[in-house]
Image (cartoon, rainbow, N blue to C red; front, side, top):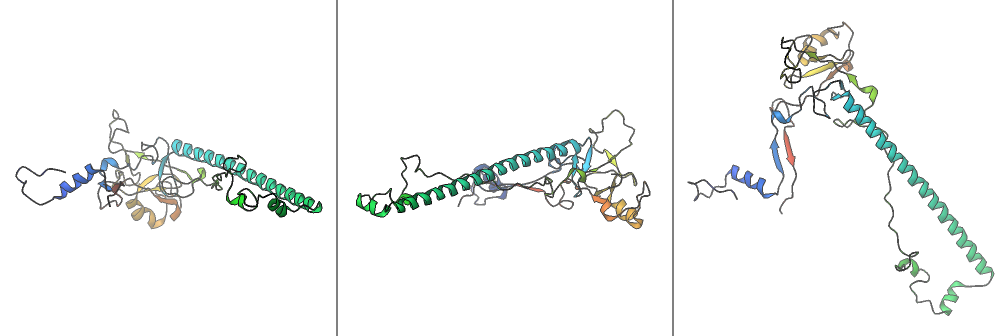
Length: 286
């Protein structure tokens, strides 16, 4: 337990700070942590690699990915689905073979019983006459109490059934079905600050809106115009584009589906974002 201060040894107050530090050190109870700005993905970084995109693409839900990373993800998922389909087909083939062999055994058993009846042999009378009526291996008792020492009578565990795989590939962020043809190329407009020595990745402010020339960041809501892939601010969309629904750079007619809001990483401020708390579940003492 955390010690009290030097001049607070006689106090019975268990402070909030002391309780939190004791909970963290005890190993029990769920830990809650408020995320800061450094723990949140920048708006122009890939949702998979968390690095600035070299060839950015966006999904219809507004999640930004590096084209190489998201294509590799889709190919990997398709390979996993193909493997699961092969295993499922092998399982179905095995089940059909087992059903066929079981039906053949039933037919053979019927034939043997019929032949025994024709010869005048009664299984029940022969069992009681031989004194094996009380045996655990005769009649219905053979099914209730199998012989564990005989390999043929040892009960087997049923194999795990493989469900039929879903052929759809889902977005790792939104969970909606994702196809390669749904990916939309994105074009960021670099900032023109006259600093040619510093690389673009090293700069804090890297891109601007091509219409209003406002600096883009996590605190600025943005949208992607689908026909050209240009990233503009939502203020530009609300005040300029939505008046006539015309692309301000190409004068092309736009629809509501052509404006895709860009999902931001966050700023660390509760007024801008909601999901700023991380939780780590741990054992709970009861």
